[in-house]
Length: 217
Ligand code: SAM
Image 1 (cartoon, rainbow, N blue to C red):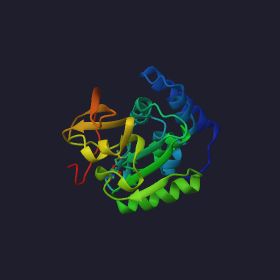
Image 2 (cartoon, rainbow, N blue to C red):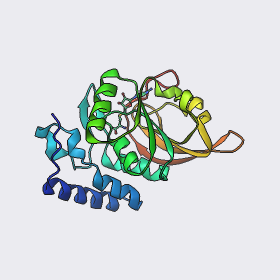
Image 3 (cartoon, helix red, strand yellow):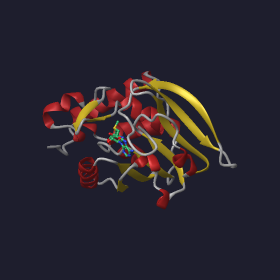
Image 4 (cartoon, rainbow, N blue to C red):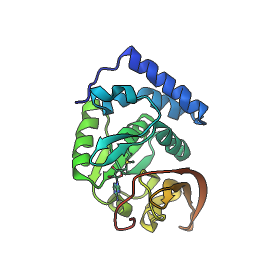
């Protein structure tokens, strides 16, 4: 079971992780502070605590993973979150990325397609004191009943940019989404224009688990 003890050792390891992310190119002070605050070891079984502050992904059960801290920081940095912004996260997973966005002041809507992860993470984040709106379903369709959003973050690899998601962005809004095949995806920053079309900027390459759904794999 997870533990809620945040020792000096863990705090020190978090500082080291923040320094490592700085060296890897994360420069947004807010994002670095958020990574420095969220106790990532809470997401791990006690026996695996030694892996919590390494910059690596880790299995969280049900064939899913908690993303690399670098990936979480990278996507958060591109989103450039402002306090109070309404953000949709697709792929709640462990909830770690959600906690980082909440630390940045997001008003967060997060959707997960796997029922067990949805229930587990919703309860876990509540227990830790993080407040978000949780949904169970196919995030490739977005969340039309709560649209539009200032920003959208997709944390699973998509085969293309789902038009449904672009349509749920506000004009001027940003979506960060990894797009490619099963093995390799290019991170795209999608910026919605006032006429409803969008510009996209290709960023670095990553490898995510697949986005599965009606507008996905
Ligand atoms: N943001 C997560 C975190 O911080 O741990 C990382 C999540 S993991 C890399 C990707 C997640 O996306 C998995 O939990 C997977 O079940 C979920 N997923 C895949 N397709 C989805 C879809 N269409 N809608 C919602 N969630 C989806």
